[in-house]
Image (tube, rainbow, N blue to C red; front, side, top):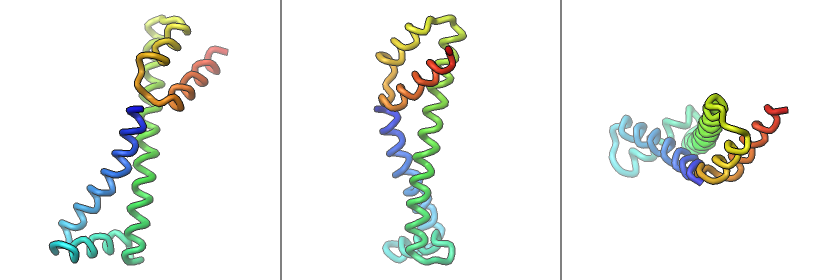
Length: 117
């Protein structure tokens, strides 16, 4: 839930920030600044290269955000283990109180089950 929302916000926001910085660095205003900014991001491949770069940046930022949330949830499980919480209590906390997506919670539960064996 909240992790998917943040992933999408990062996938949209980071490339927009990069594009805005390059538009400001071109020194032009309006459509010419936007065109020059995308062209500058193209690394010699023109505007199509710039659009391709922004798409790759969006995918990369979404992937990194997903890894950060997964690592954070793993650290939460480790902390609960260090506080001597039972396995059933950890599963209950992950199932009810954590506002992450079911996919991420299920992956964490699988890791927890594999670590117990």
